[in-house]
Image (cartoon, rainbow, N blue to C red):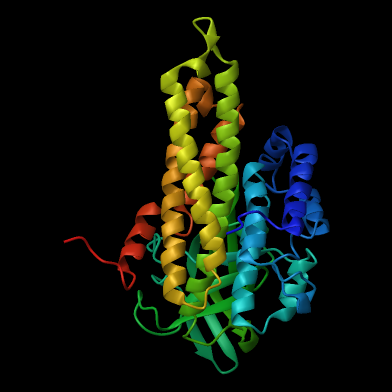
Amino acid sequence: MDFNFKEEQQQFADALRRWVDKDYGFETRKRIIHSPAGVSDEAWATLTELGMLALPVPEEQGGFSGTAVDLLVVMQELGRGLVVEPYFATVLGAQFLKLGGGHEDLLAQVAAGELKLACALGERQSRHDLADIATTARATGDGHVIDGVKTVVVHGGQAGAFVVSARSGGGQRDRGGVSLFVVPAGAAGVTVTDYRTLDGQRAATVSFSNVELPASALVGGAGSGWDILEAATDYGATLLCAEAVGAMDAIFAATLEYLKTRQQFGAPIGKFQALQHRMADMFIHLEQARSMAMLAAVKVASGDAEERRRVVSAAKMRVGLACKFVGQQAVQLHGGMGVTDELPAAHHFKRLTMIDLTLGDADHHLERFIAQPGFKHAA
């Protein structure tokens, strides 16, 4: 099997890397994350100009109909460069709209860089169970009324619209009765509390109080949104795996360079065999994570939902373990400097930690993998 990227994919990657190296360096990123907005309009315009926003959007809406493998290339570079712009949140929101259908105008706005999206899915009590939904959607004569609170909405404060999961029927943890809606950020009754997260990105608590929505706000069918929710978040988990690989590439390279230059007892510490063994272990974890991320990108569009769940959960679990191991080893090999904000390694480790916790951590996806049909428990 050929694991090399196509020429067009490599061109996307090269263009992104050149931009990050030239205009989105570490010092620039620090200024952005400490700014009031926490993101850069200039950077967003560049991503749009490079075609990154159009990449996942269907051609009919002005996009390039990019696959998950195409997005894998992009996410790796964004992870390597620690880019904090709301690209992931917007692309994930666009995936909901593509799967649900009927929101082609919004997809066209995404492709043009005119609309940023965020996905309001998690709640205080739900942890990694996205079916645990207390937010309600009450049907009215010509639409729905939404009430509830969504927590840790990635880039919620920067979004022009939210994809929101709400319960229109069934019990609080039932997969039946889940509905999905597009809610404008400026709708009456929507309150957004923005804050900076551990990794320098932005998130928000979003409250919905008697938010009236027209019937056109529905994504998919009323009460039957679970399949879309699960498929879209599997897609999102796949993109996070790719971002993690890029971040691990960067932190591994930085650690290797540090071992070559840091002197101890008159020699670079990279000459010590014990540290060489630790670098070898980091490399093994990184390459296993890379392989699983690529497999997930290939299989996430599979028409076989069981295969998709199995592969994506296996990848998210394996990548999550690698995030922890590679990040911890990098910090330890850097010594005390590894936890200071002056070094990119510390910021990569924080981002890797957050990636593991987003859309299900390693433990959650291990349980999900085991629960899939066909898994054979040991006697």
